[in-house]
Every structure is written in structure tokens, then in C-alpha cells.
Length: 277
Image (cartoon, rainbow, N blue to C red; front, side, top):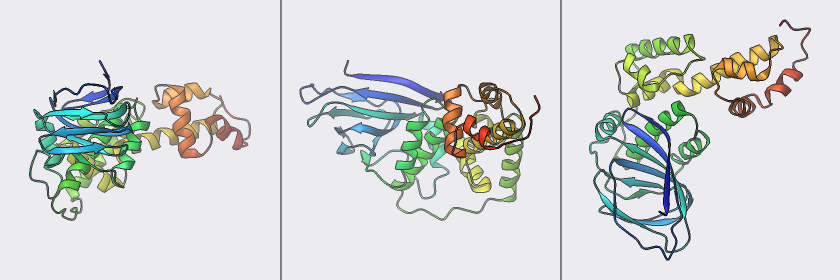
């Protein structure tokens, strides 16, 4: 086998795999088949991709597009190996996403790839950084599918202003998230409670709140952790786990990225008076 695939996250209607290929110029090509709708972001290496939509060279930052049931071939005529993050969608789930993308009317991709673009690169970078975070990967899967579909749409209409009903639904979701901020919560569950498809809920939530559900969860967890770092002498590890982070390294990385310092350095810099235990 020249290709290995590792499941990173999955949900109702979608999966994301880390795919590494070690094929080279001397590797024989063979025909494969897309068993679901595929959107694969290339993160390293390049290769040639041919399917019924046509042929294309895939480079880092480009996105492979595959229709369910379509046969395809990949070749590495000019180098060895590549690395992709492959998002797969069941047709019904993908159709729900497309229903919320202005200007999109068809389920099948008409081209084999999307070249690197300013609208896709941030999503690909976020996916690479979020390999162990199921909720964030679910959001990225939805946003990547929507962005890819929007780029292929003949014309996009201006997004509608959220209605009062949308604001109410998002407000209820925010309160639910806040009440269980230290507990795992799935985007699909929030969407179901709001009586929306996951992609439509994500778009409405972002339009109303200005951020995605995952970004809200992360910001709120870090805010509460920062307060506790200032007000107590509790171990950093205990604060991280109580805030809902699964491991200390993830907490340290996220905290430094938002607060500009490690948790320990942040606590030291506050120069507080004697703290309570």
C-alpha cells in the first residue's frame, strides 16, 4: 500500500481523514472510486488527478473535488508523495449544506479541483492546526464545503440579515453553551435544537454572534481560565482540565495564542496580592 488514511473526526454525515501517499514516478497508476462526496485539501507535495470532470495538477493549498461514485486516478510523475486532509460527505448531508449557499443549484462538481485561494487557505490552515479537535473540525468541514460550493456558484447573492427568530435561536444556543462550557458539545446537537441544518445553523450563528460556536467555546473557556489563574493558586493542569481542555499542551498552546503568554507567565505577570486557595 502506498496510501495510509487515519480518521481524525467524524459525525452524522461527514468524516475527515489524514491521508499520506508515498507514490512516486515509478508507481503504477490504478483506478479508484469516490465512495462519498470528497473535498481534499492538499497540505504537502503535488500530484496529478484525473476524473470524469477532467484532469488537474494538485499543489499545496489546492482542493481536490470528487463526486460520489466517480472513478479517478492519481499519479506522481514529478516527485514522491503527498499529504492531504480529506473531508467526506454523505449526499443528503452535503445537499443540506448546499441549500444554504446562495446561488448553488447542483450537487455534483463540474471541475476536478479548486486552486489555492484566499478564501480557502485560512480554512486549510485551521484544519491542519485542529487535528485533535472534533468540534472545530466539524465546523471547518461545513465551512470548507460551503466555501468550495460558493466558489463554483455562477453568482452569489448578498447574505440576508438574520431575522429576530434567528437571533432568538442563536441566543438560546449561546445560553446552552455557556451553561455547559466545560462539557463537550456537538454542533449537530445545537443545530437540531435550533431546528436548522448544521451548515445553516453555523452561518446564522456566525452572522448573529460574529464568531462560530467553537470560537465562542474556546474564548469563553480561556476567559474563565484566565480569571482563575489570576484569583487562585490552583495548578495550571487542574485549571486546564476543569475548563474543558483534554490535555495540558493544547491548553497551553491555545492560551498563548489568545493571551500572548503561557498560563504560568500570565499568572506571574499579574502581580496579585496574596491569593485565596
